[in-house]
Image (cartoon, rainbow, N blue to C red; front, side, top):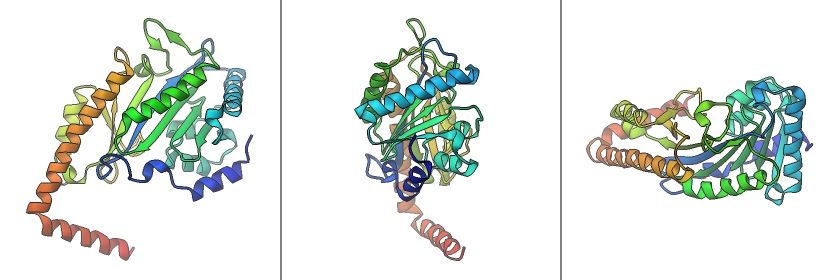
Length: 284
């Protein structure tokens, strides 16, 4: 096992690549993410597994990371050994979920690369939750990268899979592709004109969910909205990505239009808000 202190210190000094604002439409799209839920055939889902079974999954994960060249630049942490503050730090870095940080079961792990674009949660609700993040709107690029990683892991283990249902997962809403794709949007203009609620109601009716900056169970802060698919069964991965991109493009178009209108018609009010905010920040 790698040295925990060194890994965390390096992480404190690094900046995640997905935050560099260099991706497509990065003036509105902060990041894109795809997460795949996977389980090993014949072993109960993590919340129901015995300690010996959790240990088996953890050791299997270690073996894959150590032997496969795809993971040569990754770090591996055992969450059992972390303090509450250290676990929360990983949440803030978007490397693990709040659930994974707070859960007390043994043999919880996290694998992540130097760029912080790839992370794999070990023994969360599922045996493996593989996540990939990139800046801007890049779902198709992410799918190519995460699919390669998923295929590589599947060479080493047999996934729990049903010809009828697809990938079997701890949460019923993930059954099928096991995929959750999401886009993090910054929508200050729509928020200023109170146009957000109508958009959220509309997309919720067609199978999408909106969460806060840290995903499930978190509230919206700073006009940052995470839009993700809710349906994983009956659609291919490509269909999920294509549909999500179309929905987000419509929201992006509306945000761009409102920003343009506000700059044309309410420039002085905008400048006043900016200077007031700057004044408060400067004297804080």
